[in-house]
Structures are given as structure tokens and as C-alpha cells.
Amino acid sequence: MIAWTIVQLLVLVWAIRTLWKYFTASGGNKLGLPEPPGPYGLPVVGYMPFLGSEPHLAFAKLSQKYGDIFQVQLGTQKVVVLNSLDAIKEAYIKDASFAGRPNSASIQIFLKSSLSSFSFRSGNAQCKLLRKIAIKALGMFSSSRNSRLEAVVGEANEELHAELEALSGQSFDPQQNIFDCVAGVIGTILFGLDFSNKDALLKPILSINQKFANFFATGTVLDSLPLGPLIMRHKVKDFVEGIKPFNELIDKHVTEHMVHCEEEDDVRDVADAVALAAKQTPTDLKQQLQLTDDRIRCIASDLFGAGFATVMETFRWAINVLAAFPDVQERARRELAEVCGDRPLRLTDRSNIPYNEAVLLETFRFSSLLTLSLPHSTMEDTTLRGYFIPKGTTIFSNLFAHHYNSQYFPDPESFKPDRFLTADGKLDADKAQLVIPFGVGKRRCVGENLARQELSLLVGRLLQKFEIRQDPNNPVNVRDGKTGFTRAPIQTPLIFKKLAL
Ligand code: HEM
Image (cartoon, rainbow, N blue to C red; front, side, top):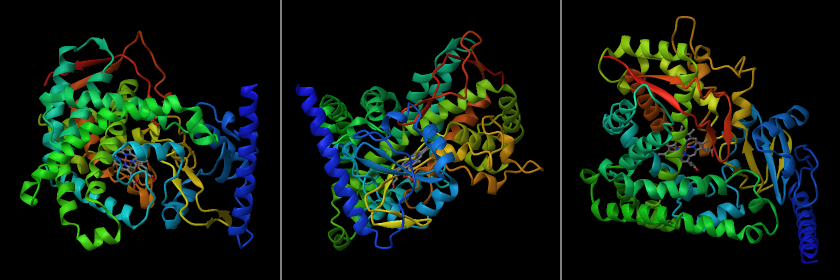
């Protein structure tokens, strides 16, 4: 009886909202343009039940019928999906009104319970300034003349390589070792954390990593049903409690940096640079943008959240594909030996190792880690290719569909670094630009340079020291990924064999 009343209530709320949206949206569409086409869904839940466990594939299929701009109703959310490079660029590069973030229940809950600064907020003037400060602070570590990143990755590599060497020739799952290594790098870059004190850093990250992924999965009941937060209240509570240790860790380090940093000579890491930027931002600008120092210093929290799992998962993808394709691995190692001899790879070598760079590009494409990127939202009523898109519409860009489009990447299911090389073996800049794992336009990833450099050093230096092999007793199909918030690589035991120098 109670269940039936709840269902009736849900249908009623859904009907009122749908009618409300219908009338307010058509009022906004003064040009009388059509909205993007799309499939019908069921009452209340919309198209949600048909998305399956890999929404990027379901969307790619829908685009065959409805074109590369279409819309689906996911519960209460209307979502427009951009399914091709042209559509994504047209919206995100040319039109500032696409630079918002959705006002969904999960994002609201996250913003209330976290120290997030700008990543999950809409692209207004305040957000733009915060992005600018973040990019400047990260630039300290990712300018190619700067050897700080090399030193930090070098230290993390030493630990990782020692752990792998101790197990040389044996089959084991390297996930924890990779996790520790990448957490150490981001911890040092952002907060200057000491590698020997890893536990204090790792426990809070561990606590948030999985919870975050589950909480933000696409098409969740939480975001899509009218009473989602109420229905999912246990999940919400679990998430809010789960991220507390992470918040405490970030708060502790950010506060310490705020006290420490008075001038440029004091800058030791990204959190210092952010703290200094907070102090240097003119008071009238802060007032005008209603920007608090707290919001600025929380940039470090955004960078930590966004810069850890992404790099770690991509590093794992690279290791898995290199193990699966020994000929690719051998050719990359040979190129490193020709250019670096016995010394470790440096960032300045990157322009001389086109094949290794191509391997990384192909790893970005093949993995398509953030299959649907991060969701955007329209900040104004707008139009795209003659379709009307009302303010507040959630927008997904299907990066996976683009990366597997045979028009740009022939034989997309195959791992082929050569697709990025010219006939004389140089990196083809035009083809390289077709790979967009960091998104495009006004909300493009701010950590792109850092991520590319960090991964180049992590993967290159690993190849210089170890041969990586699949375990013949645990064969996996390296093409498969596990889709959640990211498309994670398959977890599998591997064999690392220390190479004689
Ligand atoms: C392989 C590694 C990485 C990948 C694939 C990746 C990918 C992405 C993507 C697809 C977006 C969303 C773009 C959009 O909304 O259109 C994004 C946003 C972002 N990324 Fe990354 N990222 C990586 C590493 C990093 C690193 C190392 C950092 C910082 C240390 C970082 C910081 C951010 C931030 C702060 C945003 C939010 C930008 C905004 O909202 O304006 N990312 N990233």
C-alpha cells in the first residue's frame, strides 16, 4: 500500500515537472526552433533503464538513428548528448553558454559536503578566475624547462621500481604499487608531502576514491528521480561521511600552506602557489566576484581530486596495453635506448621520442578514460545546429564515441600507435590533435600539461627498466574496460622482469 502511494506520488511529481518544463521551455524558445530529436522513454525513469552498464555505447548506438546531437530524458533530467568531434567543438569552443555544470542532486550534495572550489560550479567570472589561478599554480610544475616534476617522479619511481624489482619475474597484481606511486607524485606536487609518510596520505584517498566513483556514475537514481536524494539517503550519508577524512587531510595541508606562504620565494608546491595567489588577488576584484580566500585555497582540493585517479588509471591502462602488445613495447624501449642511452628519460627528450609519444596518445584514445567527459550544462537558452537547447540542460560529450570513430581512427578497436606518425616517423601534429581525452574549450582539463608530462615520465622510465608481460595463466582481453565514473582498465596480475643495464 505504502509502496503504491510512493509510486503514485512519483508519477504525479514527474507529470507536474514535465508539464512545467514543457511550458517554460517553449516560452524561452522564441525562434520556434525544434529541440534535438531523441528516443522516447518510460514515465518517471525516462530512458534510464535502457542505458545499460556502458552508457557511452548506448549513446553511440542512438546517434546512428538520431544524428550526432540528440537528447534523452534520464528521469527528471533532460540530457543532450554530443556524439562527434564537430558537435563537441561547436558547442564547447564556440559557445560560452555551454560552460556550466549541472545543478544535479549529486553535485549539490558534493558541493555542500566537500571543499570543492570551481570544478563542479558553472563557468561564471568567478570560476574563470579560479581556473586561471589553478593553471598558473600548476604551471610551476609543468613548464617543460622545469625539472621539479622530473625530480618528484624520479623519487616516486625509485620506490615503485624497487617494489617491482623485488618481485621480478613473478606474477602479481601491481595495482596497489601503482596507486602508491601516483598518490606520492600528486601529494608531493600539491602539498610537498614526504614520501616516507605515505600512510597518512593514502588512507583518506583510498576512502574517497571508490565512493566518489560510485556516487557520480552516469544516470544514477539519485540524479534522475524526483525524490532521488530521499530514496538514496543511505548512499548519500555514506558518501558524506566517507569524504570527511579526505576533507580533513586537505584542510590541514591547505591551512598550513596558507600560514607559511607570504611571498614568491616561499613557494614550495602548488598549494603554496595557490595560497599566494589568494593573498595577491586584489580585494576589490574578490569583492566584485564575491570570492572568498577559502574558495581560492580550495583549488588545491579540486586539483587533488581531479589529478589523482585520472593519472593512476591511465598509467594502469598503459601498462596493460604494453604487456598485451610486446612488439609495441619493444619498439618503444628501443627508441628510448637510442635517445637516452643509460640515463633516465627527461622531459626535454619528448620531442625526440615520437613513437613513445604516439604510444601515449594511442593509450589515451584506446582507454577513453572519461568516456562522457564531465557533464556540462547550458548557462543560457542557446542553439546548436538549428536546435533549441534551453538553459539548465545537462550536456554529455561522448569522447569515447569520437575516439572510436573509424572516420578519424581507422580500425579503431586495434591498438596502433603508428596512426599518429608521418611516413618519415615524425609525430603527426594534426592527427595528435584529434585525440581529446582532456576535453576541449572553456572547461578543458587544467591539468593536461602536467598529466601528459607525468605519464610520459612514468611510462618511459618503467620501460627503460622493466619488461612487462601478461601472465599466461590469467589472460585478459585488454580492450575491455570497467565503466563507472571512469573507464578503468581490467585488474590483472602481470609479470615485471628487471632488464640488465
Ligand atoms: C590522464 C589524466 C587526465 C585526464 C584524462 C583528464 C581529463 C579531464 C576531463 C575530460 C575534464 C573535463 C573537461 C570538461 O568538462 O569539458 C577534466 C577536468 C579537470 N581536470 Fe583533468 N584530466 C586528467 C588529469 C588531471 C590532472 C593531473 C589535474 C590536476 C592536477 C586535473 C585537473 C582537472 C580539473 C581541476 C578539471 C576541472 C576543470 C573545470 O571544471 O573547469 N586533471 N579533466
